[in-house]
Image 1: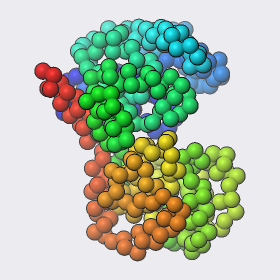
Image 2 (image 1 turned 90 degrees about the vertical axis):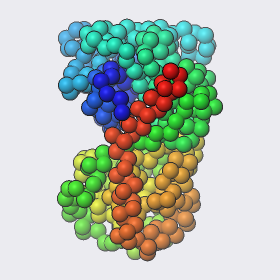
Image 3 (image 1 turned 45 degrees about the vertical axis):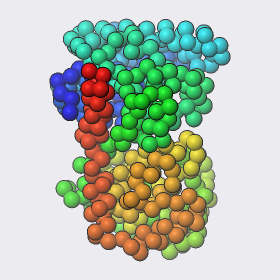
Length: 401
């Protein structure tokens, strides 16, 4: 464990993001034993215009004008910084030399804001933990001169069109420049090892206390109690870019005696899909994060029917940890990231695989298997995840001492 250290956390997600964030959870855990500054990504010029009426941009404009403080204390040892400066939106630029020049200018602006917070907080010999910010993060080590620089990969961003354009050439440079790279997937770990010897798999955490039905009473919601069993369930955003509608259609039509329960918001393709015309498919809509354990409690089998492609192959399935922490039999798509879970889940690729594996999961479930799943899922706490990150930092430091 690392204690009494000053740590700067930066990334691509702001503290006031409306969805869950690994980076925020990691910062909160780090702040239990260290002083932590969470540096929000700066407002860029295009967002300043396009989102000018949103609460998020209005807040940043007030900070820019000095009407609100840019440095906010969230806990005794945790602060968040809203940079006053604005960065230029440059990803449309085709000329690499010009892009790199402006990117460095943006990084200087960002680092200037961070330096003011460093002075005010009296940070010294700090560690920088960079969550996926491959553009601004390119120059941060040189500009801020940290005692140690960690790059965190938790998504295959270079498969995304926005990040691919310049990330394919820039992320390897950042990896080479970082003191170590930590990853939540074996796929990303292998990718990082192409550019540095210090690329490590650390897994990921989840709020294990929320999903521990042994330590607190978790009831099944009434809208689930009224649905015929067995219930085959999914919780999370129903995104056609990530999930297979075809798999869900096949399960529902092949086994009309099963209830397919989907908890979460839908994108347009899910909203207009044939799934809404099938009697044994139940869309329950969005629910508060605190309620998700109650819905999972009502499932007989939990599923994660991801599409298998470059974008999803390495994604750490946080929801699988949540399913397993509650002891649920879990059927998921056989991605590279799911190799980590293969001893405790049923993995398939085709719609036919899903029907066969769900049937198997229903038939062979037992109290002993449920306890094994719980033990595995509950071991993936944010505390254990951050301690794994600390271990990597200390390993590299000791090796270079």
